[in-house]
Length: 401
Image (tube, rainbow, N blue to C red; front, top):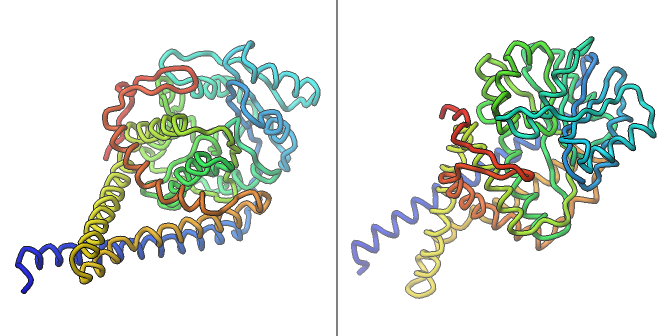
């Protein structure tokens, strides 16, 4: 006869396992819907909106592929645009490299500036504000791109076209990391998990490394005031846009690629914790979502291990709840693989570079635990270090939950 305590424990684990399996199957369904939306975005007919654009690239340090990325900006398949590159100082390696490239290209559309430092803003935000302080002239749309972003020639056309609809506050791409080292693949898997929510108006945001917004919208939300003491460019912009009722449109074909080879465990964890801490400070709703999702995942996984051990040491009837509780793991790996395929469809020009294999599978398996670590760590994080500068998050504008 089975003791009552055992029956209750079995029932709890079984119910938790059924719930976990249903949640993971729903997550897989959302993955399929994500893939469908990627296809829809790729096939959507353009309206032909091609206004005058100012494309801004903040730079600092000697980024890998920086020369190629700058050269690409000067060769975009877009009729009416100019480029502003902003560096921290004249002694910055990025400034010297950009100066050489622009001097050789003799492109009158390109301009190199030295950032006017804003005391309470991050270096990147200061660079963006410096570019925005230039005379606007006929600029109708501002686009922003990170210096480590590799794109193709149609990127700007794709990013700007939806802004013909005045209801769109901003358009955005996202980042995809590509690298062969193990921690580079972990970084790619960690970052890619965020793309799941970019089609969701409740949680998405204009990602600062690949976004475009009308000049009149920036004026309306008083971007200089929004950014004057901001650590994060995109998350503070998201708060301002939502405050004025704007929404952000995700353009998967505008995803940028960042190639990484030298990512280490320590550099990755520092970067991931910084990202999570910024999200907690500026996009609490998204942080709360991640907290709930990964708490549930961790609970079901630990319960699944307990049920599996009980099955091995006691009786096999524990294997049923163990199977249900651990089912989210293979389902999650399958979803990650499906997401990789969607990425390859969105960016056919990088096909063949996005490698999959045992290390990629292992990277996806440990991402939930790294997410948990970053979420817990971010609770007590009050200061972050970014590119040689420290920023106090106590002064951050906490987004409503």
